[in-house]
Amino acid sequence: MEKVSDFVKKLMQDREFKGGNVSQGFNRIINQIRHDPEIAAFLNDHKDELAPDAVDRSAAKLYEYVNVKNQIKDKKRSFAPGYLPQLVVNDHLIDISYQPSPEVLEKQRTQSLARRIRTVSMPKDIKDARISDFEGADADNPDMNRYEALTMALQFINQMKADPKAFHPGLYIYGPFGVGKTFLTGAIANELADSNIQTTMVHFPSFAVEMKSAITDNSVTEKIDAIKKSQVLMIDDIGADSMSSWVRDEVLGVILEYRMQQQLPTFFTSNFSMERLEEEHLRINQKGEDEPLKAKRLMQRIKFLSREVEMKGENRRPV
Image (cartoon, rainbow, N blue to C red):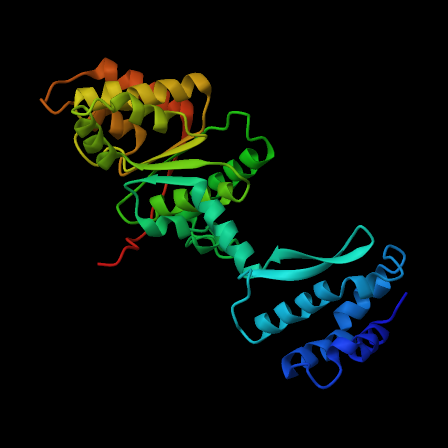
C-alpha cells in the first residue's frame, strides 16, 4: 500500500508541477491530503480492499474530498450544499459518497413529520405540541385534573405504536375552554408521526362551514372521503356551534359510520360531556326541532370510537 506521503511526493516531483507552477491553494490541499487523519485512517481501515496503486489512481477524488471539506469548514458554498463527503471503496479504488449533514437530516425529519399530520382549519402551532410540554406531564407532581387524560393518551400512543393495524379507541376529551384539550391531541399526533402513523386534525365548526360551501362546486363527497379514511382522525371542538341536520347526518354521521365499520381510531374534543353533547347539542337542530333518535344513533358511534375523559384546570390561553 502506497502511503499518502509517498503519493504526494511523487505528485510534487512530476514534470507537470515543476517550475513552481502549482498554486498556493493547490499546494495547501496537497499538504492537507498528506496529513489528513481521516484519509490516513480510511487507508489503514481499508488497506485489504484497495488496489496497491489506489492512492495514485484516486488522486482526483482525494483532492475533491479535502477541497470540499475546506469549503465546509470555511462556511463556503460547496457544489452539494448540506451534504458531507465520505470516503468509500469502489472497485478497489477510493471514491466519495455524499451524505446529508445533521442539519439536513433534521430538516428532512421535520418535513416528514409534517406530512404525517394533516390539519384542517387548525392553529399552525399545534404541529409543535409535544407530550413533554403538556402541563401536568410531570409524573412526580401530577395535576390530577389533567393526569387521567394524559395517562389515557400515553396508553393509546403505546398501543398504537405496538400494533397500528388493530383497533384502538381514541379519546373523547371534554372540559372548559382553554384547558389544553387541543394541545394534548396535537401532542398525540406528533408522537404518532414519529412512528410513521398519519393523523388528520379537523376543527369541526370550520369544517362544517367549508362543507356547506362545497355543495356549490359538488365536492362534498370528495372532502368527506379525504377526512373519513384517515388512519387516525381528531375532530376538534365538536359542539362549539349549532349543527344543522344535514351536517350532523350527512357529514359527521357519514364520517363516523365509515370509521366505525372500518374500526379506525377517532378522537374528539369538546366543551360538553358525551351526555350533554347528545342532549343539548345533537338532538336539537338549527330549526329548533327535537330529534332524539338521530342524536342517539350518532352518539352510539362516538362512544364506540372513543373513551370519555374529563380535563379540568385553568384557562391557559393568553387573554
